[in-house]
Image 1 (spheres, rainbow, N blue to C red):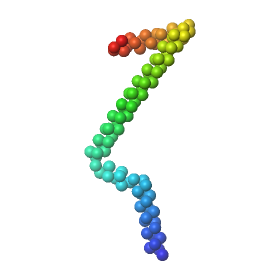
Image 2: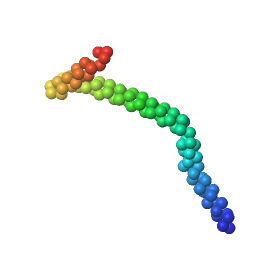
Image 3: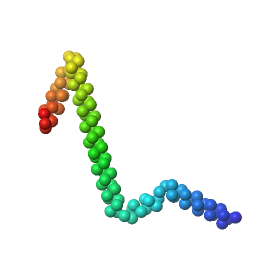
Length: 94
């Protein structure tokens, strides 16, 4: 009876470890070259994603600001046109 309970407990523990992917983690920690490579690739992907996202967001904000200037609101238009002028001045191809 006790052996059956112990076997069931070991099986349960084995399933929990498999779900937690402890084996994969241990394998990764034992291979530092693979760990460095995976971290390097994920860092590059994160950096590219941030760069693309920031570019799209900035372009959208500048587009909205240009449309607000075209509405010709007195106070806001002056401020926005100054911001757009500064941005265009700083762009290398403008």
